[in-house]
Image: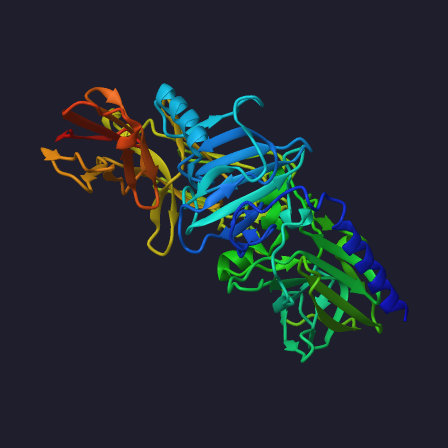
Length: 561
């Protein structure tokens, strides 16, 4: 009875906590039924998802509406990230965000294009005053699209508080149909120190998961001793969508007492990268599956609520314990996992031995590693934990451990290129070698004299690479000397296969024109409705430059009436 009462109390608090936000203030941003391809707090690469990804019926151009009265406080147009994004600040202090837009409403589009032409830049970020672009609830502000880092047409939608922290929009009454329990696909047990064991091992153990007819789960019973913790692979699926999305809340209980909680209601962008310490990062890199650790270990994430002993279980010899995990979605559909634990102090078979190297990294201290012409600088709190690092330099190839250790902040890799000939220095860049074939992936490189440096958060293999190849430019929908009177757009494909595109500049008859860049299709597009091209005969010129300064020029003449 005590166990049931504890669960009931926790659920009541959990449900009431969702109702502390205005429920009728924000309208949905689209006129169609809301179906999600991504949920708030969902686990993504190096970050938590900060909003709802709303399906747009696999097409672009749906009307995006202001969710409440307010004013456009920020507009950002970028090649990557949210692509074309709009921020609306509301009188109640919240801000709504609309990302991956195709275009803005006519008034906003005219405002931003004027600024783009003045600054001669497609990428732009503006902060209009409250009087410049006021909006009313339900008014058209944009059209849905697929710009930036979008994997397909959808609307990314956020609600942020006064501190710019993203919050789950469903807290505000944005309703998504969901009648299904979350699913659990795997449970793992961890021995958290050298004296602890799970099933006579101090290595991570995958437990046999047994589904029940009720929709809940049990695992095989385990024997354990000392400080242990658990991890879970879990996801949720809303109605009308096949996507596997993130869950809303995870709670754990030991013998009826809650000892840990993960609450995906609100977080700050500053802490989002700590996701790599929250998941089993090495497991993710090796298996591309995310285990959420149900214990807190050197992690400042505010979504973690370490109610008792940071979620760590201390199992004593000759005891019997029951560990329960409750996983729920926003609609409070919940699945339970039950694990019976028998305390048994035993000899560890095949104990895990930590690999040692000459390079020991103390997480809260700065460290400089140097060999030959390569130097690596780690700053205090670059890492979450102390560990032995693999470090080696051979023929300009830097082995910097494997990408299995999560980082909290950037570190710096520097190469001294004094031994290279002057004509070759300008074509060098620092690359991370990725994949089976060790393909050189450009890492943003700065040069000061004979020193090349890059700032990165990823361990792995790095090298000096050379790019002597110019970018390529290919017209897509026209050719030199063609009449384009009936054309709406001018399209060109640009590409650089080594260091990548850095910038481009297009002109017609010497005047700069706005060409929108879609990096996913490598396409530049000019809209003749911009009314920059007014002459009959027009000389088009495009210069494209890569990240080490190689450039290509394309010129053509076209005609319009």
